[in-house]
Length: 339
View 1 (cartoon, rainbow, N blue to C red):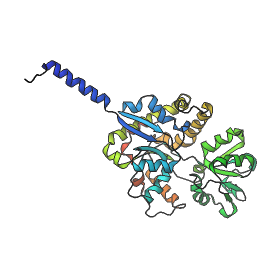
View 2 (view 1 turned 30 degrees about the vertical axis):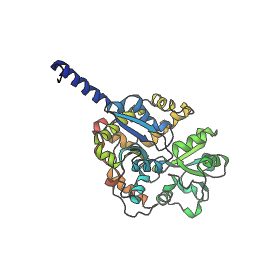
View 3 (view 1 turned 180 degrees about the horizontal axis):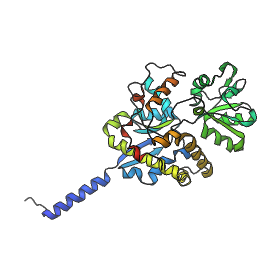
View 4 (view 1 turned 90 degrees about the horizontal axis):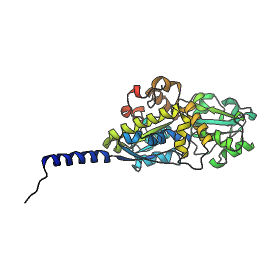
């Protein structure tokens, strides 16, 4: 004999099952950072700690990285559906791997941290002053990758600059000891690496390449194309939650950096807060972002940046701006404005 539950009980069971399935329907997302858990990564951890990702139905796990190239390959392979990496490296990756349609979906660094870093005692105050000097530059450095374009934009006679290939760990120590006159690097990395060696703030001179002719963008959130097709709402939710994290971080950096430090026990909270503030001021909160909001790009500028990359890189089939960045996952502009 077949038994059936009373109608009221059956309805209650259906409702409870529906609620359970809704609460359990969290999409698992592994997110790949480009580097270590340092100050500038705060917006992502803020979005975790404040429940912004969870509110979008996402269970996000954030892993550190070893550079943008690794981050992009992680996303392209699908090991990580989303990641954070340099968009200029992505442009080259797309050219080399036309079958791997990874795209940027939220620009975080409207200006890249690429820089020439020197000490004030060298007397180097502008790009042309590098002539006749020794420049320490790791061959795989993201900032050094822009050297030819930087040279062209600033009329530097490259034959008069002695470029010395140095390793990442010895780059700042060599500058501090006077073995080189300047180095290439990310501004908020080299500056604080020098500080940690006892160099005073006022003795460090940073020439941001974005202040000297480079129109390039910096790091963006990127997505695997298969994941984006299958989970467009998850991508939208991740971008929306991340932008909330960015806005909160800018509003209160001192609180935001605590979300980083609790995951990096050897981190120095003061240094990471200063590093975060530098990234906000130089890379995130630019005049364009103040006028237009976070996350998007100016497609005309992105097109110009691809042309600028062509100075340093030989394209097989130069991608278009629309091949590199997809604006469809961004929330309305009103939700991306700075208040």
